[in-house]
Length: 121
Image (cartoon, rainbow, N blue to C red):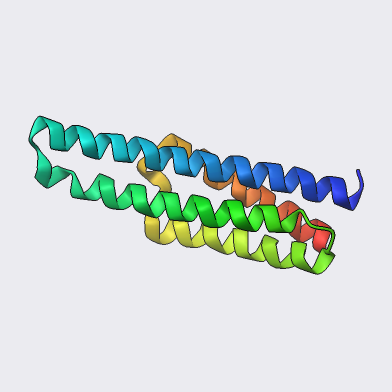
């Protein structure tokens, strides 16, 4: 494959990871709404907060993955580093262990970051 094809593959993997992370946020939002409807409002704060964080992380990952698909090699290197840092910080601080979708999304984003790093050199 060409470097441009590799960057496109990495962008697709990164965007797919971002969608999975945001989808896990959507499920957390639905869980929070369920807690409010059932009358357990004190348990609804954590899913609402986690949903907001997952939406923001998914948006950031999607934007950076789309930026990495451009023709500039230097940008691909930067995007690869940023995506790997987002995944590592997410695993350490956000606890992507809340759902399988977030873990799969984080793994796809990590793979996309490594591909961006390799194609950006």
